[in-house]
Image (cartoon, rainbow, N blue to C red):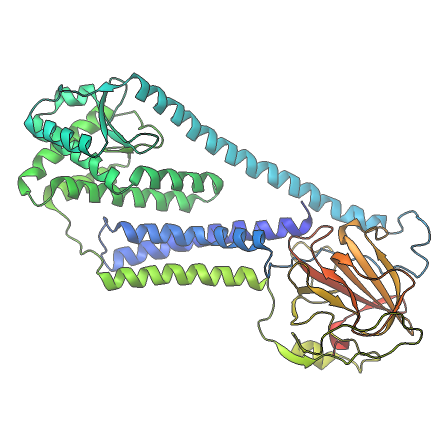
Length: 514
């Protein structure tokens, strides 16, 4: 993992925690201010998804490579002299390589820490799954051992839907399992303690969980939270999602019959007493699985008196969905931008010209080339002694010359262009090819490199190429293809890194581009 990878994924981790904090605090404030129902399942699920959006957007853009954020290297290497490729010389800039080594070591440590957290989260989940499997293996079919007509009627309804009801000596609470076989598990002690009407309500509650696919949804959320174990707000939002799921299943069990309210509350109290000090198995959607006294009190209130807060209307739900999708799209667009300026100024491509002893004809299409122009750079630029065409068609600069801070040990020594993998790179002016190699001296991080000499002390370098179409010693015309962009060396995504040197000193390439 390179220093650029460290910067990219640390930024995503920070964005993930920040998005979770905003969703928790802003969403919670809106919930209290608007008196939204605690059973508004969609509301809390949308907030959970918004908190998850930065990681999803970053992973998609990073994996696709399409307009991926081109996080540049923390420091550049000097352009080679014309004879630098003649022999393998000892590194003349070893101090610069040593300076970046701690960043690479930090990357390994951070990656190990992250993977250890994921492993611990998955190990806890796996341990719960093994315990659940053993519990299900020891459970026995309920058969006709239920206390009365109401509970047997619910049992028959579940069987008709392919759901098995089993009794377990080990279970502390009733719960539903969605995979690999849909089941409702009821503790034998609970079945013996509850009367017929109360047990029927417990079965109706768990049947509602299965109808709404709550066990499967809960498993997916647990998997996402294992990958993002460092974000506490994601777990807090998931707890509110589960509470809303329990409340709506309570309401489904009671239905429109107010006579079921008290028996449902009594069954819930009996379940709490039986489950005191014991946790429900991982992956199970349980009738009483939360230990928060406030949540238990809220559920009792809903069971006995109903929901005194209004549900979200359809228009509000649609607006919330639009907000969630819009927020996700905005985050994805931010990832795609890669920190570049969205403004683009069109500039025509310089027409191909002949160079003395040119051996390669220009094949660059005569099309408009777009690039970003920094107003500050344009204002401070001296009259350009050399004019360079933009090396890519439809170009966008993502990192400019001289940028420092963050993970950069030294100011950025070139400019980076966003480019898809395989995008053609063209010579900005007539030149002699002095290097076309994947063994750039003292700079393996640069990957495949082409260096052009334009005369009068001017040289340009192009790094992270996928391949090159020229060879050392070849003379080429302006606009001739020299290779294609890629992500060779150490780069988090496809892009083109360009540097300009005049008389052995780096200069800002941007004012020279025409």
